[in-house]
Image (cartoon, rainbow, N blue to C red; front, side):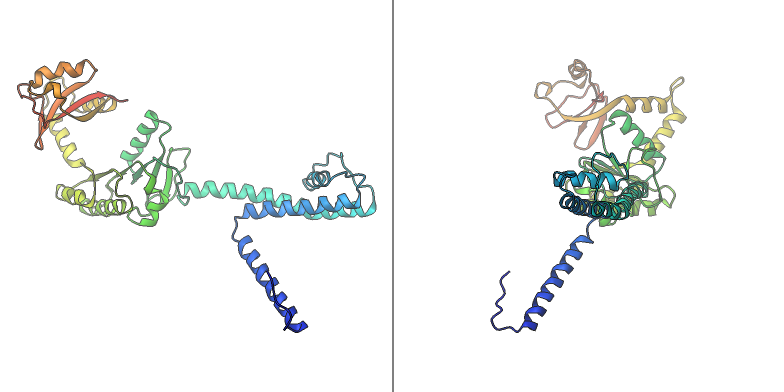
Length: 354
């Protein structure tokens, strides 16, 4: 920095330099104190050890052939290890050693205790849902209940590498060692909470209904969360659970790709349990089917166009897949044996999990 001093008095020059020094000092303090505590301590330790290592090198050059040897001695002495490979012999050198023990030893101890405390605090913040998630291609599960607990266990069992983020405002703490999810505490309808869950880089979202409150209110909360998720990520698949039939269309309008009506499913299952044929167990059958198999929708292959549903079944059996139905103009035809397949049909296939 160039300063023209020709027109200034001595006092003016002093004031200008003094002002510049103060500005530089304030800039340094502003930068230094904004750094994390652990980083500040590391820098402080390095500066102190470099200072003492350099001093002892110039005070006793025969005992400490290089500055590095001096810095090594400073770290060993400050850490109270004391290997004895380098020892100051003169009075000035030993005085430097005393000041090093008084300052450097305490600084290193403070660094270690601070680092341990920060580690413990970070683990505590993780369990309390205060730490933002930085990963990608994760599944975000919104709402913590018995259904989502079992879902987390199933995902972890089938793919232990799949990362999951749980967002919930009712939990105060969730230990990671108990459930393999990254917990975010907060209202999922708020943008700041979704940003913490890294909604932009997520793979998909599941919004589970809160069954502890009135059904209509739970559905409104689900719809608000769906709007917030869609507003933060236009492309992410959203699976929303709705409890009342009247709110299904609203959930779709809000941006949900798939709406699961739990009451519809359970009512149908109850009906089968009440009126099933003898020696049949519908619930166990459906449960085991969905555990081991998955449904997929595919366009009708060209070679099957014009053939009957019955004749198309062996075509898929060769690949260990089972043709179970057809979707035609929003009509679901399940096991329609005599139906002729058309080019616009979508086939429902049952196959093993990949």
